[in-house]
Image 1 (cartoon, helix red, strand yellow):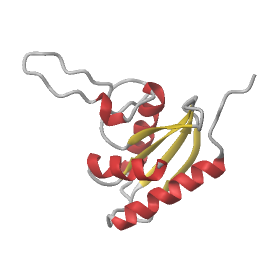
Image 2 (tube, rainbow, N blue to C red):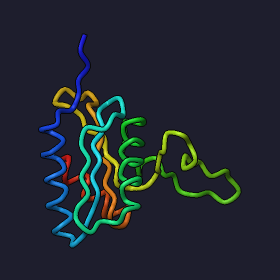
Image 3 (cartoon, rainbow, N blue to C red):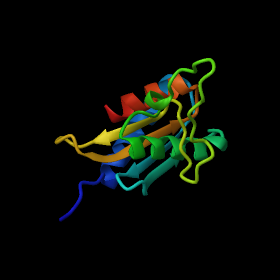
Image 4 (tube, rainbow, N blue to C red):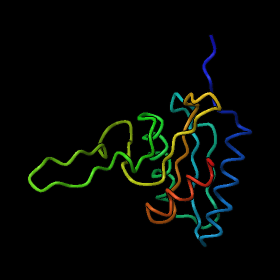
Length: 133
């Protein structure tokens, strides 16, 4: 039995759409597309993008594929006196801020995730949503 997965062609199309949106916002960003097993399918860094964005884009993508949700959806508001949930020191490199979105096929099955880093978390989330469509 084969599992649904994202193709390189689809990943490249998503990254191209994301780069177009990043240029519209006058940002230079990094894009990481993982398959449903959190394996790297495609990775591109726009000229001039911050080097730190490499790791951030990968962590956002990994977070989205692992939880099958946008990375910012996992960032619950802080409550005074309550413990703060975080995953920033896990071996998996998860990151709970905007810029990661899961990618589903036409049947609603998870096939991967996109992680974007280069602007604010809100800008990264916007770029990722536009890229995935």
